[in-house]
Image (cartoon, rainbow, N blue to C red):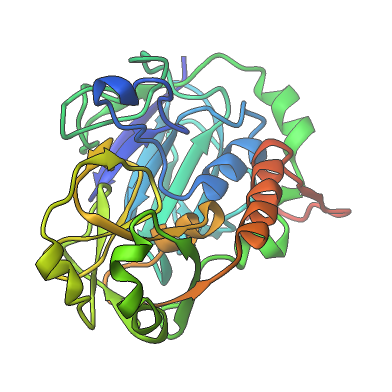
Length: 328
């Protein structure tokens, strides 16, 4: 059985698309932060789109392939990928021979890298998902972040057959080009939040200002630095309501927080806006220091975008290159 042995890891974990159906008992959905990058990683190696991947925040992830060969793919943030000492391309399948090491450098643009392997990872599901929820210590590999020396078994698969199927595949440019650049102000589309009426006097200011992603951000929520919404100070805590990925909460500090995949299931802070699902993936790829500006869209526009996003998530389109050049 082929094994992936971690040789370098900064902030990486095993994630799939999350565990649905357990929020009523207080269990977050978890799962990958940038869903489109993850499903494309799986599609590129012939996996089920919900198969678990390695999510490496900040890049800086390396592993060896031992006890067999493997077909892998790296998607997400712009980074340099090497097999041993040779540079290879991201966003396409890579054949990795037994004993070779795949090295992913720190990201250049974006924030998160995804690594898939044909056959998937042999990880036991917890509540129907392989996703790691490290705050509670379950899922993934022993409920924790990956570290050097960890070994991940790979599912049995006919690699020659897989390679015949996937060789030459790559993702469309519009998928790869979603990754935001560090030197730009990233536009994020929102609809009005459930507590808009409580904060409507400041909503236009919220839209017109630029916010910066704080270093205090994590998989639970991305904290923003910028002009505060002062009304939130007087609101304090409200009656708790159900919350979800993409909700923008405003605690008494007045500094917004965008809830992400590990977000709590309920919350008592005012919700000023909701980030549309496709743009939550974009937010995920914004490292600390990235600048965001929010734009309100209508419910009709949001619903159209959600339908397109869900269609893409379930019907991944890949480009088959006419000529497959040298592997390296």
